[in-house]
Length: 221
Image (cartoon, rainbow, N blue to C red; front, side, top):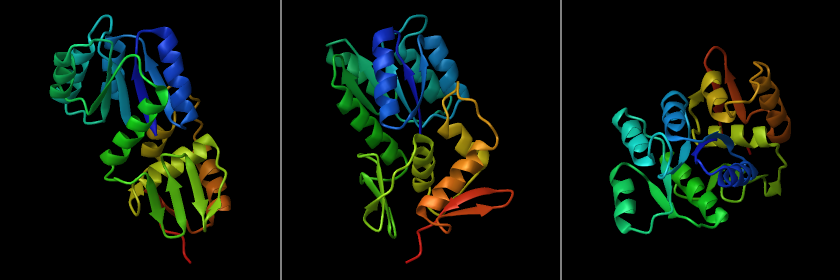
């Protein structure tokens, strides 16, 4: 899953990137409102962390323009402002949640994970497909009750497919949601990751539909 962080405080932006990458998100960072607006318009993010007090273009304006253009990705706003009116303005502009600075990083990660789950119609923190369980909150995967160790790319790919069970997901869509903007997107990487997942979780888990993409199905008993 891929997240955009729009935050002008360099130290906080670094902390957010590290915390979200540790939670196995692919992360892009924008340092001002204009850059954040552009990235949110042209890239398919699964969620956004948006500061309100941004240079060049404030966060509320960014959010209003995204929503006005039909961009529906979940957005959690960050604000150092104490006034309740700022929080209300953010929610009325289309934000899905908010946190006031300073905040605990683990809480932000948990809120972001919950927003992504709900955006895909998943209320529970676990996705169960037959013998396969993907624990989104804990970042764990198990098969038949046995933990399966996955790399970051393997985990993100599986989670994205798990959010679309039984649906065909194209290679281009997967690529757009798996990698940060500065990642070298080798065309063969996706096939390699799919192959590793099949070896770890069984050949029947991820189906290839030639010319269409991939589909996650519940593993057979």
